[in-house]
Length: 206
Image 1: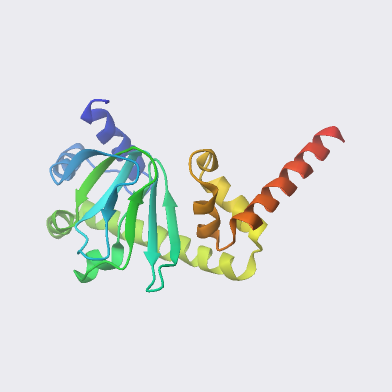
Image 2 (image 1 turned 90 degrees about the vertical axis):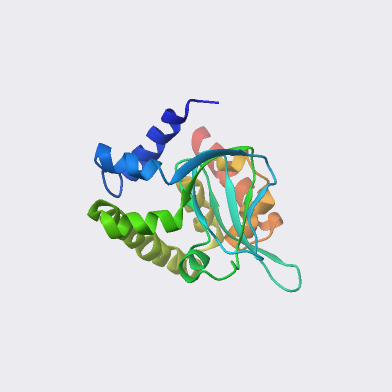
């Protein structure tokens, strides 16, 4: 395992796309975090408990999913390295989560204590600015684009956008997870991939 400082450096680099912390502020940030290795298949958050942490992925893949009363699974998101994952509604409402979060690979995560972060927001403007910038980009801009994509884009376009935003992820996890996330069947996904591969080969020949 890498030294913890290397993982915190990775976290700091990821944060820079939203806000660049001073050294002093980032040290305060580290004080509300801890690093943990989790095994493939481990459930970090379930629907029977309140969320406490935001997870930063140093290594691995996390899946957030919803399980309805009939036992049908809906994969909301798939996150890989340098992304944050959390049951956001549960963190904000302090109610039991309606989402589950599962590791799809052996993973190394930085657990960020959400209550600790809220305390930092109250005492340090840098954390407030980071929080606002993160919310605007991910909970407004990206969320709205994804919602529009589900309405107007066909399955092939959604798949291509997913691969563009998550390079190499399709070689690391089961195809049914990707299909479920895109709202299509594994058979449909297989057909899309075969068609794209055939088009690519033909383009190379021509």
